Image (cartoon, rainbow, N blue to C red):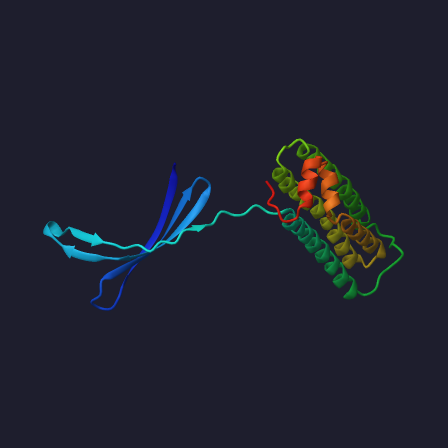
Length: 228
């Protein structure tokens, strides 16, 4: 067996004439696990010839298994829901604040050409199509994996990228509304927010997107078992 030791120590005297005491923390990494030892070493030093010191130490060690536990299906789904809710609530609050602090809205476009008239709907459509294209392409690669844990971790990353595309386009639409006070941009922003809400993760959606086998489906239904 091979392991890696990492140790940190410092010395402290107990009283003006007391023996020095060394306190330390040693970490052992062995076979994928990490063990932590808390050390207290009372040093009894007696000098002999050539100034060589003899040390007699006693150690108090407590072993702690700090290997991180694998997530359960329930914890995984809660994490995915939390990320989605944070992004959705963030852009919704931002849009609500911009609307509430604005000076009303316009319906008619001005005669001068505004770059946002073309930029905002173009980016909104690109965000919709690109996010779905990238998400679908990543799903094709995920379905080829054998490990359920690998599938779920990469699926989470793919969902975050998808949400970020839609949220970014919605924020841009809201900023355009703030600059121009035109309802056209507000409508685009609200439509993107509704679509982001529609993408909210559920257990059945995860199972269907990943095309899980019957064995993995039954395992994913068990909320408190660790994902392997």
